[in-house]
Image 1 (cartoon, one colour):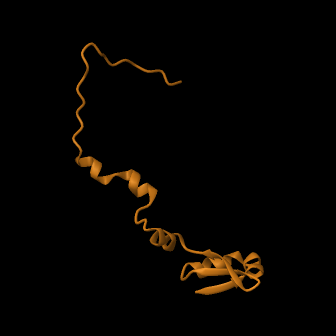
Image 2 (cartoon, one colour):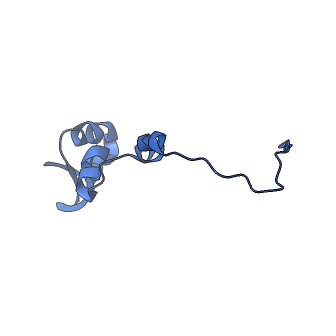
Image 3 (cartoon, helix red, strand yellow):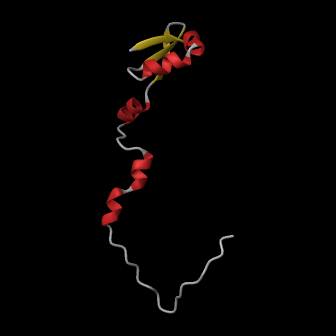
Length: 83
């Protein structure tokens, strides 16, 4: 755990971000912890999230889904002008 005053944080945000890569950074106001800076990986571990949004949207298992919709009678394909 790394403690940093609000003043120190405001003067060197980069230092706080580098420290947060290794451990939580507690930012204090008048000596009392007021905020915590975490790396995104630590945050995801804290909330129990293991996959990123991009990983969830990728749906690698979707390649195994067999999707063959039946064509409705009387329906034909037509060109669509999206311009």
